[in-house]
Length: 76
Image 1 (cartoon, rainbow, N blue to C red):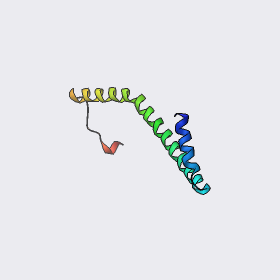
Image 2 (cartoon, rainbow, N blue to C red):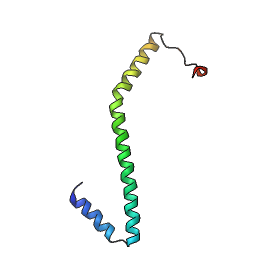
Image 3 (cartoon, helix red, strand yellow):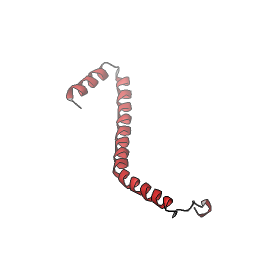
Image 4 (cartoon, rainbow, N blue to C red):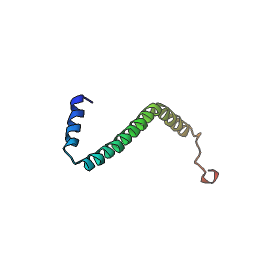
């Protein structure tokens, strides 16, 4: 993020009463934590996607070859 963007946000927050500034900062902390968590999960999904695709292809092949059997819920 550019420093001008950070400066703009800081100036916007400074126009608020102090109590509101504290609330905004707390909301920003929560929002940033959520974004970081979402970015982490997105990265994990991207990294595992090739393996999931390969597994799905193997399963399709097994089904096509008649090697797959329906799942027995009683065995779970």
